[in-house]
Image 1 (tube, rainbow, N blue to C red):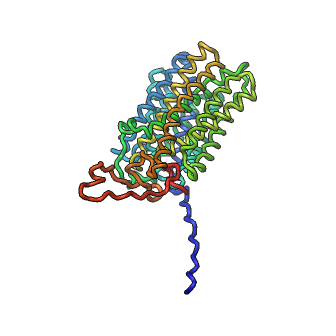
Image 2 (image 1 turned 60 degrees about the horizontal axis):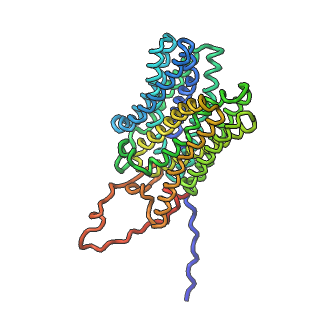
Image 3 (image 1 turned 120 degrees about the horizontal axis):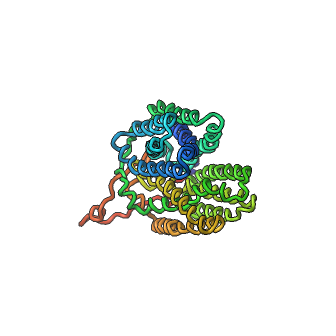
Amino acid sequence: MTDPLPSIPSEPARRPPLVSRPLLLRFVSILGASTSFYLLLSVVPGYAADGGGDGQAGLTTGTLMLATVVGEIATPALVNRCGYRVVLAAGLGLLGAPTMALVFSRDVWCILAVCLLRGLGFAFTVVAGGALTASLIPAERRGEGLALVGIVGGVPSLVALPLGVWLADHAGHGVVFAVGAVAALAAIPSVSGLPDRLRVSGRPVRMTEGLRRPELLRPAAVFAGTAVAAGVVVTFLPLAVPGSATTLIAVALFVQPAATTTARWLAGRYSDRHGSTALLLPGLLLSASGTLLMALTGSPVAVVVAVGLFGAGFGIAQNATLTLMYARVPAAGYGTVSALWNGAYDAGMGAGAVTFGWLAAGTGYPWAFALTAAVMLCALKPVLTDRRTESRAAADGAPFPAVTEAATGEAGTTTGEPPRTSAERRRPGRPRRRRRSAPHSGSPCPPE
C-alpha cells in the first residue's frame, strides 16, 4: 500500500482591497458636501436671528431639516430615473450655488428659500452618495469600509462647525458663504469619474416597500432611538452646564464626535468578523447610559464621561444599523436603505431636540436628560426582536429571513432573483429537494 499524498495546505483567501479609485473620488464629493453643509449649519441661524429675532433662527433650521427629509424620500426614485452622477452633481450644485444669494439679501424669505434648496441638495448627496458608496465597498469588508466613510464624513463636522462661527466673527458672513459655496461646487468635477449605474441584478426595493419591511425598520428604529440624544447634546448641553463653562463645553463637544468616530471604526472591524446584530444592544445601552449621566450637569468630570459614553454608543449604533440594513437587501435596494437610514437620523435628531426643549422648560435640564434616556430605551424592543428572529433562522440552518432574494456574490455586487411561491418551490409529482445551506455565521454579513 502506498502512502497517501501529503495534503497541501491551501492559502487563505486574500481580502479584497478596501480603497479603490472610484471610492477615492467619492471621498472628494463627501468632503465637499460635508464641509459646505456644516460650515453654514451654525452660522445661518445666527445670521437670520440678527435680522429678525430667535424665531427666524428656529425657522431656518426647521426648513433645512424638513427639506432634507423630503429630499431623502424622493432620492431613490430620482436615482433610478437619472443615475447616480446626475443626482449627486445636482445635490452638490444645490448645496453650493444658492448660498451666494445670502450675500446679497438678508430677507427672511430669501434665507428660507436657500435653506430649502440646500436641504434638498444635502439629501441628494447623502442618499445617492451613500448608496453608491456602499456599492463601491467590497462586501467582505463592508463594516470596515462604512466606518472609513464615516471618518471621512465626520472630519469636516469637527472642523467646519467651529470654523464657520469663527470666520463669521472675524471675517464676516460673506466669507463663510463664499467658502461654503466653493467647497460644494469644486467637488462636482469628481462626480464624472464615478459609476453612473451599477450592473446589479435583483429587484429594486422602493421606498413604499422598504417602509413595510420589518427587517429594515427594526435597525432604523434603533438608530433613530440613539439619534434622539444627538441633537440634544449639540443644542442644549451648552445651555445646561451651569455658568456657561466655555472650556468644558469645548472639551465635551470634541470628546463626543471623537468617541463616535473611534467606536464606529472599531464596530466596523468587529462586524466584518463576527456580525453586526450583537452590536445593537451595547450601542443602545451605552447611548442611553451616557444621556442619563448628563443629568449630572454640575460635575465637569461627569459631563465629559457622559458625552464619551454617548459618543461611543452612537458610533456603534451608526455602523451596526447601516451594515445590517445594507446586508438585507440586494444592491439594487441600496438607495432605499440609504434613504431610510438617513431619514431615521434626521427624524430622531429633530424629534429629540423639540421634545427635549419642551421637557426642559417644565422639569429642568437634569430631569429632561433622565427622561430622554428612558425614551431611548424604547428601542430595546426592536433590538430584542431582531436578535430573536436571527437566532431562529440560525437554529433552522437557513439564511436570515430578510435575505430571501439576494445572495452575495463578488465584492461590491449582489445577485438575486424574485422569491418563488410555495407552488414553484414544490411542484406536484416531483420529490421535495432538501436545500443545502452554508453554516450560518450569526449575521447576514459574509464572514471574513
